[in-house]
Image 1 (cartoon, rainbow, N blue to C red):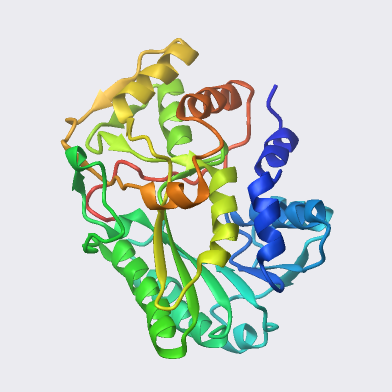
Image 2 (tube, rainbow, N blue to C red; image 1 turned 90 degrees about the horizontal axis):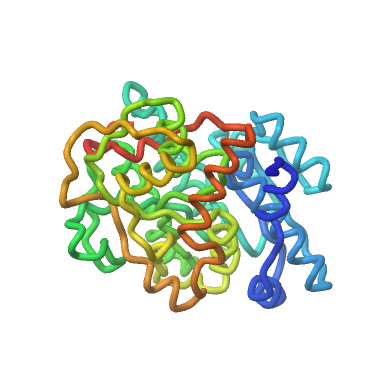
Length: 338
């Protein structure tokens, strides 16, 4: 039986590799944008790794903390929190200096019609953060959407491929990367660009979106016929361990699972779990937003949870009445409008 407590425990139990790496990370760690989908579990994961390693360092979570559930989780676990609007520049510059920063703040959904807000969060703010923390090691969350839609036969985009963002959200994310690249090349700031494709938390994610559509007899668009995703617990670990791989010039890595999932086959698998026939629309294209994470897997190892296990867990979570964050991924989008 899945419960919120069980899921949070699984997401925040550190691996031996993380415990060893947390010993090598010098200084405190600040998470900017810690109140979002991944931030609370990441803060607890870091805290638990520090405790297991038997060392002392602070974890500081910074956000507006608009989600009361996320805020309570951090409060209940004695995580130090600083509540500010990161776009308030004086408040940003008043933050304490730290040796390590994980920058997670960003805006994706609701971009269309409010593009200026998206660019403010995804490109203007990073320039200020890069200046404020120019002496820190910085892991910067980015997205696979900065790549072009790629032929499936290629195995997905590599870090060395040219960025060709489609739409204002992906363009603003590339601007975020360039702001930190400027800091790396100008100030010598050590930067790790973390291009993530679909972390799976069970309360949200591409697998939740497909499973929920199957259960509620909603059509699933097959345009993006394949996709990557990965267990969020592993994805969070790589963000933390990535602090040891921040460099100047900046280091760039794709972070996701090594498998390319078939949208249709995953939906059919959920159909078996729920006893329902999936409804499809559109045509399976021979291209999709997919990327090759070989570089990260070579350094950090394979994800801790397999693809088939993730699908089973997602079905069980929904059947057990697990909570949803109601934050759809829009995995089917190909025109860049979010």
